[in-house]
Length: 182
Image (tube, rainbow, N blue to C red; front, side, top):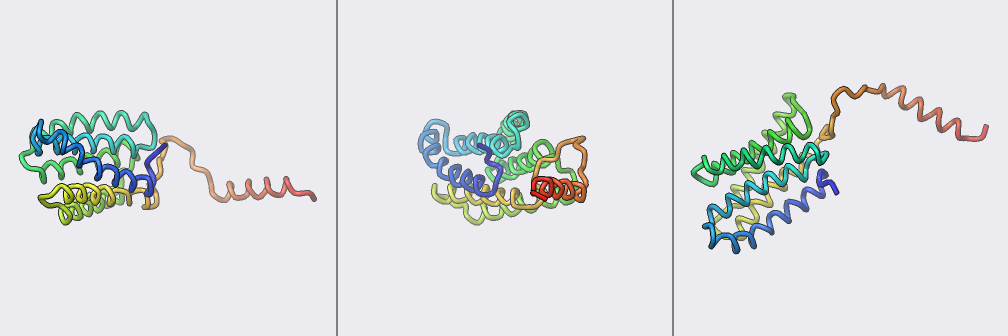
């Protein structure tokens, strides 16, 4: 089942927000809360690239790249806001370049709006409690769900011949007329 629709990605956002609580309660005492949250955020970013991919093949490659780069970012950053910003940029890059192959000014503006809006909402919802952390994750991923509402968020295959809309309509009309008794 693909998660690359608004409704399904909103469900994914809710599940991801809820799953952070048991993870932090189990892994927090073992790794420390900061490192447990860091591992969760890197895994969540890589996992979201995989589940939002239009195909499993594209998703696996992008997921592996995001996991490796996210691990490097996790070691290099000092604070959680730096990590969140870096992982958000990785998510936007993977989505625009590797998954949906959209390289226009419109795609850049869309990614900037989604990542910026998601980070602003997450910052508004974030706080020191576990519930606020859950809400911040949910809020960020919920904003990312709007990617699938924007027109043109469909997969574009390279080299696919463009079909004339008039010819397609004419063929449908002929098929209807041929199927009717004269």
